[in-house]
Image (cartoon, rainbow, N blue to C red; front, side, top):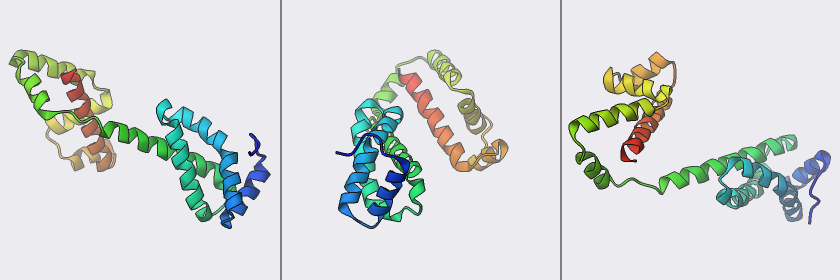
Length: 176
């Protein structure tokens, strides 16, 4: 079992040894960085995802440590790998919760026109300002994504993401 705290010089030596492909060095390196990895994952993941994020991150580290250019950059790389794994797990969680379009249509169709208009206004007002702005430009001023991107000084991909998120939030509001 590795000590809970490994000095910086010792960790650099472990990284260098692990980069040679030495299995014992890789195992020691992973054991040495596991407490730091776990602490970092606790701050950036859902509690239920911490173990998975740490395990996946350590597997990535073991596979790719040879590609690391500078041993001194190991800690930054470790935390980047963990953060990416946490984000991956978060995205996967949202992917598994699809909204049933038929249910949504039935819920919205059952409302009167006046009630639906009022609900739409409330849904729109509930959006954060940066989402409202994109919806206004796209759906009311009928600008293209490219035109909105130019007007806001942002990449088109960011505008698309923001518009998609705004519509998703409005839909969640309407179906709540």
